[in-house]
Length: 144
Image 1 (cartoon, rainbow, N blue to C red):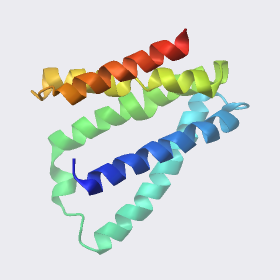
Image 2 (cartoon, rainbow, N blue to C red; image 1 turned 30 degrees about the vertical axis):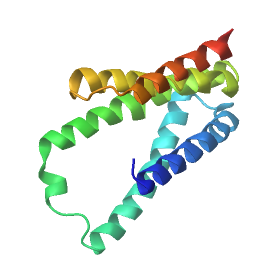
Image 3 (spheres, one colour; image 1 turned 180 degrees about the horizontal axis):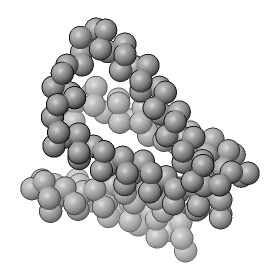
């Protein structure tokens, strides 16, 4: 893995580590669907501002708006991860502690690795297999 990709992945992990704390504090008096809506609205406002900046720098092209297969796949991903998963995430956060919810939902890399193998013809390496097993063992250890 290149160092810039590694740094970005670490940054994502930090941001995703901060978000559940804000989510747990914020979801207390809200309907989980409304909480998911507000989270998405925050993301949309940020992304519109950044996209306008990138468009002014000519880093966004007309192809970004006309590749309908890619657009459809990303929209579907938004429904699955951005809407449904967020809604269920907020339901779980409302029902119990963040420290119990987060480790369980953290098995998503294991699911993504398996689906990448099945649908994207990606190969498993020993590191990937070991990492995936480690994730699963971590979730099991937290639950017992």
